[in-house]
Image (cartoon, rainbow, N blue to C red; front, side, top):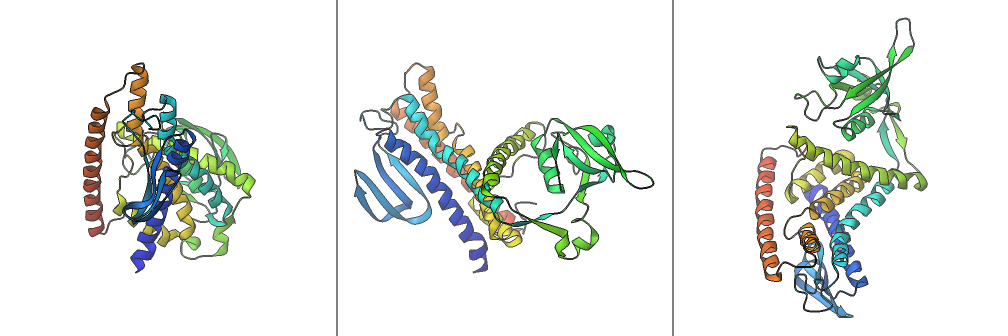
Length: 372
């Protein structure tokens, strides 16, 4: 029961919400363009019950893992109300609408998360170690330096420093630090530090190890004193812009993780439903249910990115066929050939899902977390 409460139910709830939001994007744009929606379903077949309204079947199905929208003629343009019969730009809008919804949703989720009071670590971020020969060492940074800002953005704790460094991978970052001087007081020191794509193991992009001066102290590490953290929340007019920034930053972080692969660094973690459900349980257990908003936002962004990849059967794969048609000045790929490509793509996706799930199960059997 504990596993069900902390892992399965949160994961299923988030997954259903994200897929339904995605499908609503397809549904509303299809309706707006006069494309016939054959069925809009909550859950996946077999169908439990349904009703027909204005030519569309609205169904409730047995498998509660999301939802779907079935459009008329996704590859066959013979019916004027079919998707394939529409102008190329309309098809592009309908195909991209699901991912657009999954990109727009995190702005709201992050904004709500920023409005909910949370405990954050008290800084400032202090450099504890500078690796020999690292970019930080070459720039003159030293242990004991307190980080004030990065590229002009003020930072108040270790978490903000780490986020800004990851956002600027491959770039030279302008550090402003306060350095203790003999006799008391501080002096301001500025340094330009390169954030490496593929640093040596354990060093990090810049070659520094940092901690929070207050929250990272020995007394805070061994107790839950109120002076070790501070409560933070924002009004809606500040939370919404922060939600947009957090969404944009998440896209940059996802891009940077992919780029790291080409430099020999660590790429993004890959997990299937089993692995994500387990990770969801770990997050809820460690940080509480409030973190589900941020997790849902991140999963929504990942769903948008994956769906728009130019892979057969995904929205991005269908989008690619429309782009190819535009390039060929209206000459389409034969519907039966496109259908075969998508069928092969579906087989590949299912096979990949099985392989990923296998490794997720092995990892769980070994007692390892997705974050290790």
